[in-house]
Length: 182
Length: 76
Image (tube, rainbow over all chains, first blue to last red; front, side):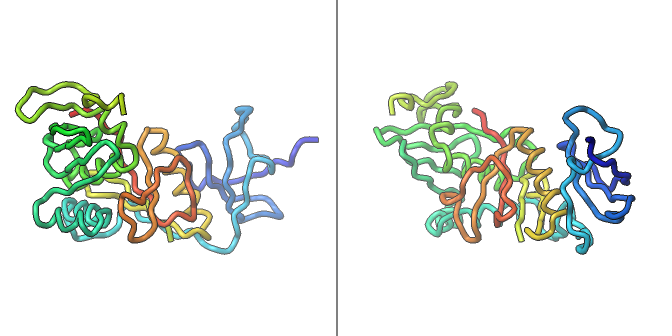
């Protein structure tokens, strides 16, 4: 026996294919539900087994796409960056405009674009260049937010993709020498 | 209240939700899945935690306090 068919009106379509709708039939008239994409491709009408019911009471609370702020993009990015730093990193950032991140592979100093310092645990010093995709449109502090989070999570990956040079050398594609052996 | 920060040219775009507001949660989850599909990277942290304590996540948790979205990296 097939599930009963429901009449509805669309409120909002989500990028993943789900749809928020308002039901028009008794006994659920007025209820808001989320419709999940029908795996059979039948897009005509939803069935009970396709929906997850939302509570009837609470009216949707509008969510602004972006908070109302007066700060500049750079200020907003700087606030986020500072909130992600440890107290010692904050001191470095405020005094020198750079901050250190210790990894199992050595110390990385973030804060100079295209000139990231790296001191491997095995000795020596390299300069690195690593950027987030599409970073041309990001405030500088957001670039450091991006690199800080990725470096803290997966330093091996960070050092594998980094372009590098010795202090007075020419640039090479990653990975940084000696990384694979660690 | 959970908050999603998506870094962009404005500094970051913010999306907020209350865990008991199912509509807001559905919206936030849809945004999460869309960004994941575009290979962006999500990190969760609790209030006051540094990047060192942030955790990379692959699925949306309505109970998360803060989700920060960043981009994949490459050699510059």
